[in-house]
Length: 83
Image: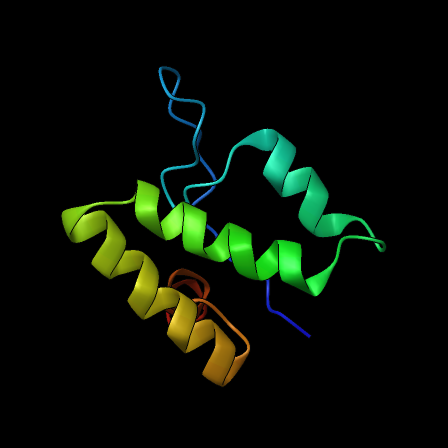
């Protein structure tokens, strides 16, 4: 199973249409939720969204996504739970 790239920073840039947190557009977000979306499509999409992100945004995504894979929760949600 491939973990969704959502890192709980769900705000869409009005100019690009991409999420500030995960770099996906609304259509890609919908595709991730469909039962018949292939693992290959998800792997390809993970590559595409990381190519969109740059600098600190890419590093932030990578760190939070890695944490989500390893711990089942994004860094943002973890910080909310610690408040």
